[in-house]
Image (cartoon, rainbow, N blue to C red; front, side, top):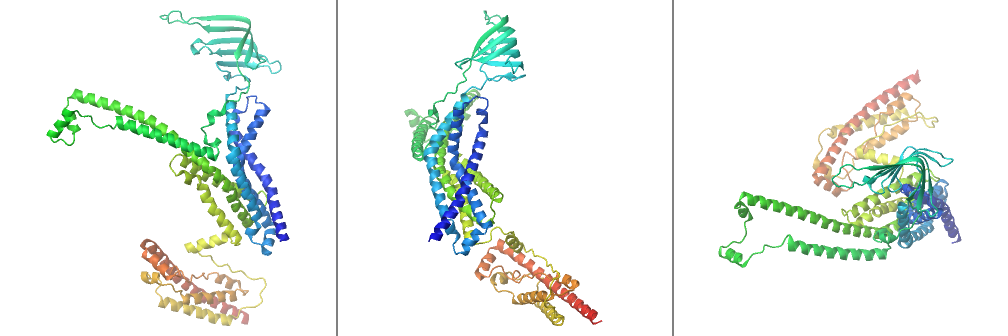
Length: 635
């Protein structure tokens, strides 16, 4: 029992060391990706250190649930890959400890991480998300630092466009300044040119103090007469001019109450309450719209008592509107058509507006439901990714940062594509919201179970030779023989006995060709009602392989080259597809599938006929070569 406890500590310690590193690496990568999206909101605004620290802190808290699955996947791959590479996993299994028992302490730890991820998403994440979005909105509203470039118009000061031809970096003087002041409107622009100038920020950081030297000012004057088309202007020349420009450079935190409608800043209870409120609101709006439409657009025809009596006396059951329209004059028809067109346009505009209101509410409901389920799926991803990473590491037996990183990134990219794509489709209303949010879990959970099963059974999963052999068998592709001269030969062939076996094999092949009509079309019914093997071909193949093994001990290179002509015989493919008779019959009844299998079996029969003739010809060539060799040795 003590040995098992030490093993648990060893496995858990190995995993924790790698998990700590991979978690901070993954968190750093996600934070850099998030920072890259909002770098324009941070650069050039003179934000203080405490504001930037809050931004990174809250963004880190919100990205922890997304970093945990990838960190677990990468750490599991590296840990069990190292175990496999150093033969530690093999030693554990040789001691009688199954894989599921080896990974048990790490599974419990990943379940704990999944619970912590759920806690972060449900309790800490919404608060951090709200603070983060409040910070981002505040950063967007903060004015940038005044840093006027050379040779281009600077327009970050509201109401002003400033052009500076040259800047003296040492003294701070601006040379050849052109200022367009649109604070009073575009038609009442003030244009100022100055040879030199200097720009300073006041002590209260609410204004810019502009000092201008040796320049001119042009100003449009409002026309005193409405009839007059000429607008006069005023020109002013100055030696020195000082002006204040309103410009606030302080960082002010906005009120985050406008974010309360967002679903990602709420916990599961608040999301449930919001869904109930939105559903009740949508139902009330829908009933109100329905009542309004039924009482206006689709209201029934209003008939007077006289009209009712007339319809009853004349036995009119249906009002023929076409006959009424045809009885009108051309002017009346034009008036009716114009009125109808205007009415239809008005109804279309009204319904578009109502549709927009209902769609917005439906989108909000779907977004809330998706975020409610997302808190569970991201937590389960921690456990699922471990059951993918640990078995894969045990199978590939590669540690370090090479293969595990490639596989981890590939699996996570697949997970992210499935998750984001299905969630987006579900939020658009084209898919069930529960199915779309759980799609990534539905896809990856069976994959994790499959890898765990294969690793626990020590099955070969990534052996390319196994898959190549399967597809060769499926497509009927055979390998060719490659006979090579042996370096050490213990028993030389008994050529006299081998010649007798060769003659016997040739006679068997010839007899089979005479008794079986391989070139002709086979009987469809016999193929799909037969489940017996071809014992004759199996015996020929057995004799031929034994003979090849015997003759492979020869030193004659010509003889070895002739044996390369022997084909690998398929002893079953030309008879039936399955050993189960009822399964064969089922495929025979399904005519499209049965017809394809029938043609494939006919192809195997034609190939068998060719193979038997090649065997006969090769046997004759080998007999002649053995006789030549014997005659040469006798001389």
